[in-house]
Image 1 (cartoon, helix red, strand yellow):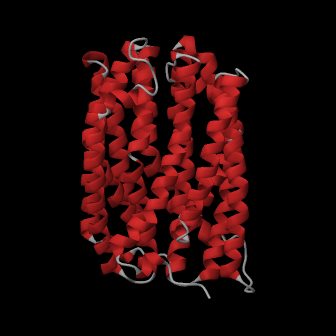
Image 2 (image 1 turned 135 degrees about the horizontal axis):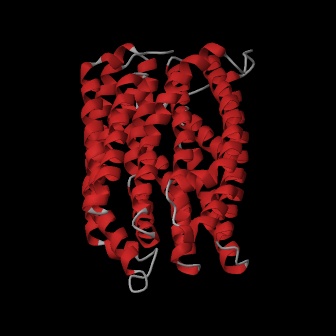
Image 3 (image 1 turned 120 degrees about the vertical axis):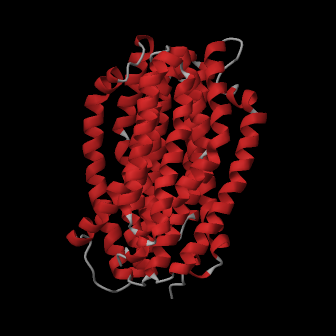
Length: 447
């Protein structure tokens, strides 16, 4: 007998926190093994190697966010079917989008492999790190289908209320990635190519394990009932959600990517520092994004079950959780900035890079709560299927970040790029919150 999801029957605040906790821990592990590339090459290969991985990081993060956003958007449909107890339709929705995103990942892998040099040129990547950056991206692109499928599968586990499974897989793959990083860099002396290969292998193993586990879980729901593995109507409905979610999830990373081209003009030392700062930021914002993602799944399931008042209660509880994490992260950024940035570089040997990384991290630490408010509100709108308003909000966010960074930094210095980030977050939250307050999301039930 299939039990009722905790997101449907537990007290909203408790349900959201317990659901988000494995996502937070898992995403921290994911960020740690992404950071391991930077820490290991920065410490054992040098500043230029760190800058090369950093030059690739913003672009690879865009690809990751496409996978995460697509999975989250498509899984909204599965979550609403689960809330409505339409299990056969839920399984078909999952199968449909696994097929589509696997095909998309192969196409993106091929395109990325051939376009990487042109992309890095367009971003004004410094000449002294260009070859290493290309090498890193070429190897990373080869493993793109594994990365895509792992993130899509994780979103499906979350939609089914099984957020603990991706946590276990992330702990395993993160540990494996760090071990392989050390072996390829310290033992085999492969440099930047080694950390890229380590990521490919770790994600490949995690993707295969995730697929096998998800297929077993779906058999519990489908049982002996017949049903298709592909549905064009579900594809059309889910694609609208997936595209908007891809845009929303990609805004932060795309903003980093386009802002990075402005940072590149200040040289490889500034880029190395900015790379360290954004890596630390990516780790710090994990709780904010995880609570937003939990809100998305909470909204989808409860809207499918017709529990609109429960969604509003969950929204208020999520905002309180955000304030708690925001205060803690602000204190960490102000009190422990130097030792954290020192993980990436020696202040005495890379003074310019260290100054840039410290400046960015201390500044952005004051605004993590604002990002959390934006993330929770976007998650509520995404989970209901009310996509137009939060798509607009995130596009405005991107436009502000990029325009300020590109137009103002040549005249006023690199710090202007820092200021653009909270400006974009604030505009995004204001627009999304106005959409939430209208209550139109209550009429967007899909299942």
